[in-house]
Length: 277
Image 1 (cartoon, one colour):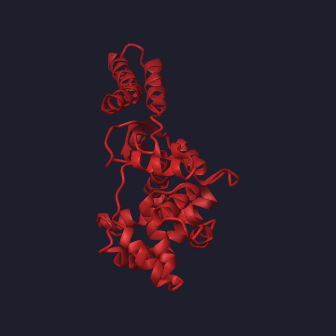
Image 2 (tube, one colour):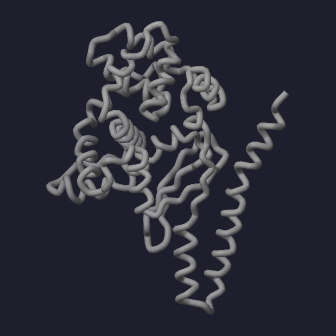
Image 3 (cartoon, helix red, strand yellow):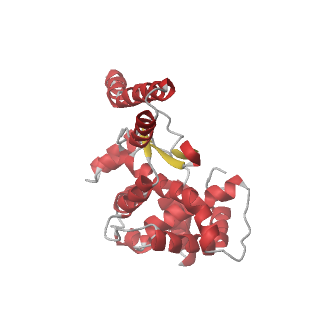
């Protein structure tokens, strides 16, 4: 379900319904997976993903952020699209971590039984709400928003929130709306709904960030290519089975993919340069 101003209130109601389940999952993550509490939250997420054999590739698709795929020996591997702006990647980190670890929660937290939903939208909402809570839980977004100059444009204030919390536009708007509702701030709720469906492409956000002296690299892709887990796994098979050509052919194919993905940044820059007046 795509969240819009029309179903924003419904989304907040759903967040309240799943809040206890998400909080249980956060406790699980803090207890069993986060090893470096002093790291920024996005670095904590990256460390968890690396322990699960993270794959990173730049795929020129603005609507695809990442996925979990089953690889060798039924290993579940997270894939992150590094063509997305860094700020969106950070949110996707935690979203995919939820999917990676939801079975772990079933086995450890809810040992006496737990109702599992097979509804895709609800599973995705839980993953999104979990991601937002991992990002916003340490500081008060509501207080931070109000600490910004009241004379600033609304979108500019939201840009400051995006930069400071390293969170996407919609994630900031949903969290801020939920907090405004709790504080019974109807004026802020009205403003959020008015701008909620406002859509800007990353280059436009870069301009807003630049104009407000914010770190615009957060709105740029990282273009990281990381196929190390696949390559190491295939190399082990080649060492164990040197006479089997199948593994050698797989390695050649993966190396071709790696080279192709590493060219994406240069090709994208060439396309953008070609569009300049």
